[in-house]
Amino acid sequence: MNSNEQGYRRVVVKLGTSVLTSGSKSLDKAHMVELARQMAALMKSGVEVVLVTSGAIAAGREHLGYPVLPDTMANKQLLAAVGQSQLILAWSQLFSIYGLHVGQLLLTRADLHDRERYLNARDTLNALLAQGIIPIINENDAVATTEIKVGDNDNLSARAALLCDADLLMLLTDQKGLFDADPRKEPNARLIPEVQHIDDSLRLLAGGSVSGLGTGGMATKLEAADIARRAGIEVIIASGHHSEVIQKAASREAVGTRFLAIESPLESRKQWILAGPKAKGRLYLDAGAVAAVTSRGRSLLAKGIVSVEGEFERGDTLELLSPEGRVVARGIARYQARALSAIAGKHSDDIEPLLGYDYGDAAVHRNDMVVLAGGER
Ligand SMILES: Nc1ncnc2c1ncn2[C@@H]1O[C@H](COP(=O)(O)OP(=O)(O)O)[C@@H](O)[C@H]1O
Ligand SMILES: N[C@@H](CCC(=O)OP(=O)(O)O)C(=O)O
Image (cartoon, rainbow, N blue to C red; front, side):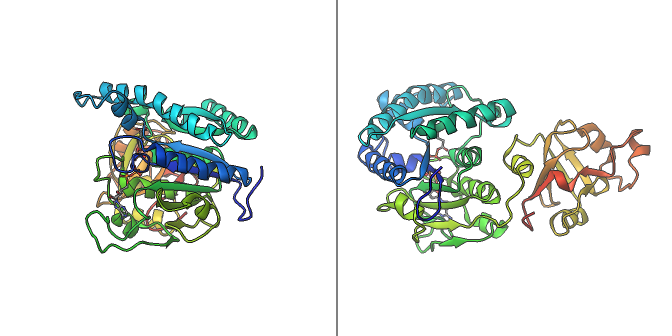
């Protein structure tokens, strides 16, 4: 792999619907060609580019002449099926102006969590990049149901960045970056140029999408940034309409909001816990257990669990919540839901007498846990 003077080898560029439509109801091809030009220039400077593109549903609506359809899952999938082919056709034509080929990968959550499918996707990405072809990724909306969806392309792009071992993730949107309040609601909101830690106070600033174009707003961009930077990947949120934004971000010029990667990235197992399967259950902890887990880096002992939600087995991913309902960690269950429900609220150190067996006193071991609030472990 090559790298540019700034040291980036591989960059994932995520373009939101808001950028691709420029706030309108149709794809803004004039702007897409400008973005293709910037990405092609980056490729020519020796940096590999992976594009995560939204816009399939918007393109489907446009192509079919804005049909009035009942708001069902099947109709959204219809729009995505029609629109995705238009979208990839547009990108293929636009990149061909710059002498570049593209290859399409449509992914779902299942492709990223099944080890074999994950490795297949990674091999395909690497094979495309080795030939100088731009991989273009979107969620496979036409077949993905809510259960198997990542759900938004911010989170999808973070997972793509992990998958291809990128060193920079650019989330390009319709705002100049992350502001201290949603600029659509608060005209005096100020841009935050650099973020060193993602904590609850920052999460509170990031609202949803109010334009009706995008999915998730800044909240999902912050989730994506959290996943990527914990894996050692820098993240930039910036405006897709800022002049030469892609070059500037890749040259470390001040643009948008830059999230520094954490210095000692999570090992790959913990990255998987963070970005991996949807949580199958939730454990509500007492205040003492929250402090032990978040501030002291301890395992979650069964006696700190107040209540249990969901049907899960040993080995499934869980969310750990504070008494106020804040998610403070994610981790792997050492006991199935039925067992933890039997233990919850008993404040007992001894599991054996309650269950007739035990796998140790940790319900979630610290080696199987990523702390989300109150620390960066
Ligand atoms: N703190 C914030 N700073 C900037 N934008 C914010 C903030 N909170 C919410 N937003 C909203 O997030 C939107 C961008 O997200 P979204 O609509 O999902 O776009 P995209 O299609 O690019 O993913 C902005 O238009 C803005 O209204
Ligand atoms: N996969 C969907 C986009 C989902 C999404 O997250 O959109 P956005 O918030 O605009 O990046 C599509 O192609 O229409």
